[in-house]
Amino acid sequence: MSKSFLNNHSVRGLRNNNPGNLIRTNNAWQGKIPYSQSKDDKFEQFENVHFGLRAMLKDLINDINRGKNTVKLLIHEYAPPVENDTKAYINSVAKTLGVSPTERLTVINSSFLLKLARAILKVELGKAHTQITDTDIIKSITMLGDVSTDNLKVVIDKFALIKQYAIPALIAIGLFFCTYITNIITI
Image: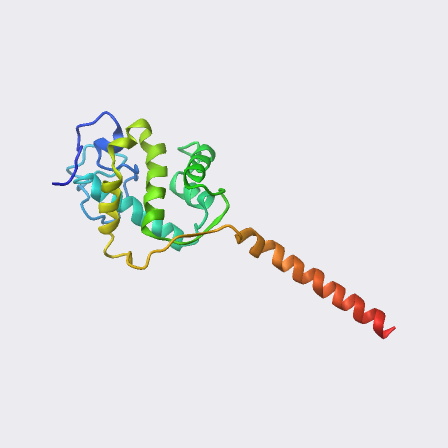
């Protein structure tokens, strides 16, 4: 039987079976409670926490695929500053993942999704995050049938900034010296 806290918990994210606290949208999430039956006028409600977790994970994967591929970019999109202490949120998630906020997340796998979900739940649910088990998160990951979970692999690219900035700078310096040496030789 699927875990459900629907309309029966003091923590809003659990009460809505929406541990990621996704705001209402027109997305046709699997397991979404229709608005006409929902008891929350701001946040989505789901039939059970697994559907809520699945929606959160799918939303995060879509954001990563659209270029929000650092913790800073991802959380800034997920938890905008108009409603959150986004800087603290970013730092908390980065610390839990063991990365810097600006490290590029290049590939995604199930163990990374588990860590990412846990990091977000710690912020969204506070101490109540322990009521969502790793087994709940893993079950939700397996429900991502429409996202290619078979080939999901996460690699934290610790050298992303070096690749992005240092290598082009070294190439420019090298070209400068080649040009300088060529000019000296031809003189």
